[in-house]
Length: 102
Image (tube, rainbow, N blue to C red; front, side):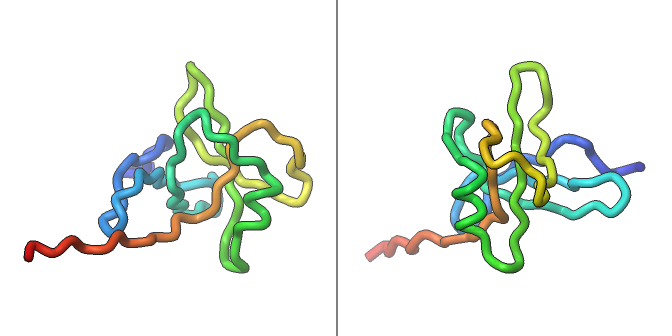
C-alpha cells in the first residue's frame, strides 16, 4: 500500500515535547496508534497499563529487540498477564507551562 509505512514515524508532541511513536496497527482494519515512546529499559507491565487506560483507550504491546523494528501489537483478552514487553496506552498530552520573558 503506497504511503503506508510498516515501521513507526518517530516524532515529538507539539504540546508537551514528549517522544511519540505513531503507527498504523493491523493489516485489514488498521488503527492509527499514537503512544508516548518510553525508554527501552522502562518496566511497563500489562496489568498497570490496564489500570491506567480510559474507556476509549486500547492497550498496546511493544516488543523490542536488537534486530527488529519497533512495532506495536494489539492486546486482547487472552494477552498473557505476565508478558515481559512494554505495554502502552494512547498519548495523553500534558502541555508544559509556558515560560514568561518578563
